[in-house]
Length: 363
Image 1 (tube, rainbow, N blue to C red):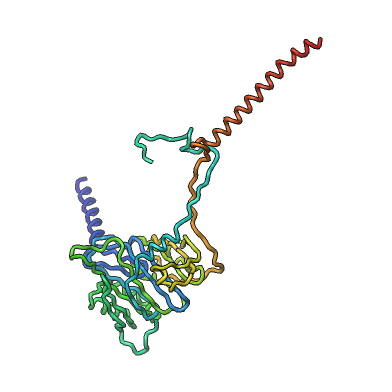
Image 2 (tube, one colour):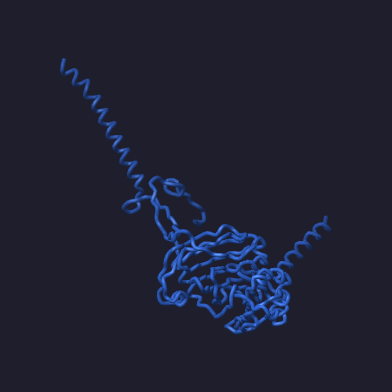
């Protein structure tokens, strides 16, 4: 019996230790890999896609957890890309624009929790590559804040992985297989190393600085295929700015995408104006969950919907209908009805008492 208990404890310890040591491959648009035996996970990915019919811009921000001090990730793009630091205020602006509308619904009859059914508790809680290109070409390399950014072309998945490893980007062996479809389509790559400023003890945690990536594209696309390497469920928040209301062509292995806002916005002075050149755009906000990242089988292709139907989420708050200083209308109604009924009964009783007396007088 003791031996079985010891074996069980050892197995549990091994499992937990493995979970702490193994790197967490995660990122909704690419592969985010920590260094060494650290771990990192993308808790949420929030991105803005702006497409004007010819050029696409993606501003992305990751919210991460773990204990990694350095990490690297790679994002495939369909054309020659430029990369710069993004403005985090754009996410605050979009969050404010897409807030749900709050409405109050009043009801007549009391419900559970209303007097006299109130509950009480004791505690009160309530882009194409040239034909004769080398296996890997370096388009450019920049240092942007915490990011070391390399923009690459590749005609050989293995050569791409070798270049990344030789230049300090530690990525998994599986990457060679996963980038093969992009190599076949002549896409290019943005490879990024993250090393936070502020001393050697600072780890990558919370909201990372956003990046703004721009490339030519005849159709809006949001790269997602590499996120199949993630080991934990993924959440995607996507804002799409275009001439029309947009939607994903398919769910690509995740839950059905949910539209949380759709409507025309007119940017005021600020980060959104810089992104759209101040032009009114149709904004579509999309939420999607990927409980099993391994099922992701494609990138998100976006298309215009048949109609630019506006939509805003409505959050209803139910309240008991009251008057004056909070007197329930139902109570007044019941009291009035009771009083009227009592008056009717009283009148009938008096009427019956008078009839015999009237009959005696007639005789």
